[in-house]
Length: 197
Image (tube, rainbow, N blue to C red; front, side):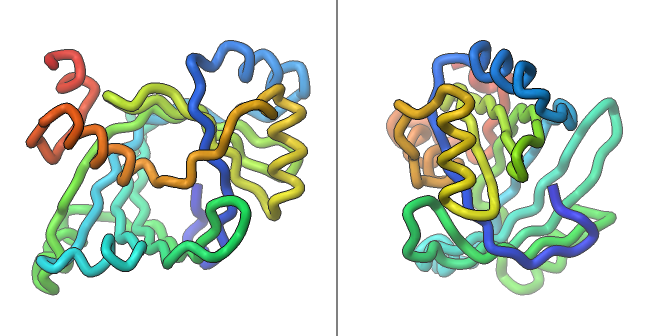
């Protein structure tokens, strides 16, 4: 999660898992710090020409909901850089009102293109953030974000995840692919929607 404002290089891996049981056991046995459980609602914006997605960039408003408390982040992510793991420049800041920000985007011809929910449990260990993510239609993933490839790889091995292959696609791209595969036209993807289909 972002502080009031951050500009940094995001380095992370995304691993598909069947469930979180063994990872949670490993995190606990390694004395990882549990940050909390969150419901995140991610809204992705683009112009009518899809200029951002076509150039591998993104503009996102994210709502973090935890114990009825809500925080909002605005994030811009640049193009992926040529690294072993997914690496890109990220600029983010906390904002107070998502609705007003969306109105500003609309005035600049940026409209919401995709919204989806995600359940995320966050842990900190070995200078890395570990996110246990569940998404409607996509299932369970573990993301490890850290300062460099070596630190991330070492933690991946430490958590018993060495055999899993990194998926370089963003959740937004994975969700778009899944919606097309399932023939779903909805642009707001919730856990409730997944239960109905």
